[in-house]
Image (cartoon, rainbow, N blue to C red; front, top):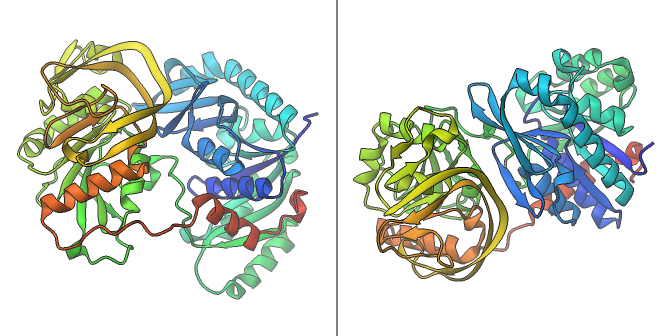
Amino acid sequence: MPDARTILVAGTASHVGKSTVAAGLCRVLADRDRSVAPYKAQNMSTNARATPGGEIGVSQYVQARAARVPPQTDHNPVLLKPRGDGESQLVVDGDAVADVPAGQYYDRYWDDALRAARASHRRLAADHDVIVAEGAGSIAEINLHDRDLANVETARFADADVVLVADIERGGVFASLVGTLELLPTDIRDRVVGAVITKFRGDRSLLAPGLDAFEDRTGVPVLGVLPHDDPGLPEEDSVALPPVGQQAIEGTDDGVADADAVTVAVPRLPHISNFTDLQPLAATPGVRVAYLPLSASLSDADAVVLPGSKNTVDDLLALREAGFDTVLSAFDGPIVGLCGGYQMLGDRIHNADIEGTGDSETVEGLGLLPVETTFSPEKTVERVTRRLDGVGPLAGATGVVEGYEIHMGQTTPTADVSRPFDSTGAATDTVLGTYLHNIFANDEPRVAFVKNTIETAGTEYRLEPDPEQDDAYDRAAALVVDHVDLGPLGVD
């Protein structure tokens, strides 16, 4: 029997608010001096973070910060990073193990994944009072109930109490809850202690008849109804992004007129990863982050950021096929490439076939930075601190910045070029590339980039000092503590 109490925050579907509820619970319990740890047995996400032991999904990294504990690989022992075409990179205990198709994962790696998940949970349970576990997708996927590591297996080996989370914004919230309960294995259904409805707009009293009918029908109490509010936590997966070929703009609700704002264009790469790097920009007053189809014009853009990619070569070829290379070469505003985007900006990529994408060993890059990248099987995963000497798009910024690196391959200059981060990265007057993820979460480079973009664009708006913002973890905690009955969870 596990030493710690485990609460499994499971969902009726993906993107229903599980991560927010879990993060809020972690902060609430930490504020009540409970020793709490986040946990997700198996995550699928291209948004990862580096810990001292290796990489984990962004949500568990965020939840660890909410719980005020150092993020570690035990918080997310199994991570699948989709590469496209039904294949994912499998990361176990922080280390990349293999690139595997879905069927092969269950045939060859399932037992190892289950052992790793159990062992991580045992270690956490021995060190903490409460574990807040997050499920994955829907707990009612009946085709996966015999191999559902993040939901069914976790509930069983962790002896967990289950909280069902359902999103009312999608419609059919009561049907989703009832249907989920009906499809659960009997032993898992018996573990459900309550339901939480998220993203509600309006007068809760209007829900009362439905809440009563649901409780009468199922015997499961509705523990809370959360209002529609985004605390500002990083997104876990690309569900939040527009589909490939479509456009979406973030940051429009900042009170700044569109005519006075600047637009940072981000090509919506087919294999985009770690796009949470862009969220601090979208949260900056006067900045719009526009995710664009690869065939889109940059006529309305004031700056461009090439984001990370899980398949750098495939996405580079997709950019070229769509003509984006020509459009970008003609662009005269600031350009920043992050990780895979940095690799694409260079002259060429060697050992390109290591990614398993194409037959060519060398692929020509976009040619906007005098650097070249050589891929290798070894993967860099580390949290880093760098001294910034602001040049190019970050001109004017100085000081120490923090972030993380997760990449394969090394990038070296082919000519004299400015090195903005302790002899790493590369920059010209208008183009900068770096492996440093989360760079814009640091005030100095973010403010410098926005100021330089504003000056290049010639807009009238001037960047004001960032107003003091509510801590995202505390906002998530407020959603939980103000709207959820924690009594049935035994943590009130």
